[in-house]
Length: 201
Image (tube, rainbow, N blue to C red; front, side, top):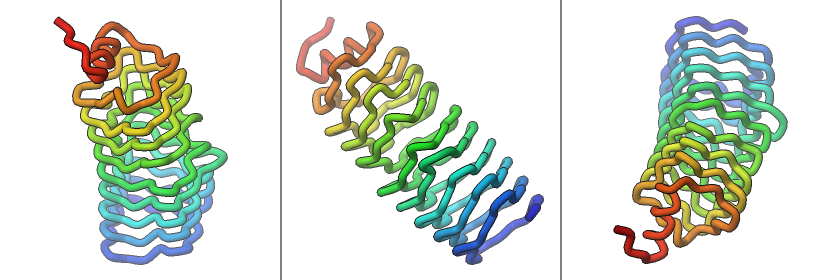
């Protein structure tokens, strides 16, 4: 299946098989992709607004320069391999998703809900995660160098061994996070001290 520059509104693609599909510069508004399969699909410069991907199989998908705005990925699965390169995921939900095989290369994940997910395999260096909900996430050993975590919610998150050097941590309450063996630069250390109640002059 090849789709180029097409526009879809309020359409159902539930359980559709997009295996090997090529989608370029397509726009989808409020479309349903529930339980659809995207094995080996290639997406480039596509926009999905308020679309539903409930229980979707994302194994093997490759998306570059795409926007998934306020989309619902609850229960979606990418346990083996999936690549999102410079994608905008703003405001999307990933509750109960399996993202163990996901590779994230840059992009904007601001305002996303990733609460409670196991993200240990992800490399999130340089990713924008402003105001993202990461509460209860397992981020042990994750590369977050240079990531923008401003105002992110991290209560109960496990960050043991994570690399936060160069990360923006403004407004983050690090006092409610497991930070054993976390790698920090000077600014990060100051942010941690302030979260713990220290006065830093």
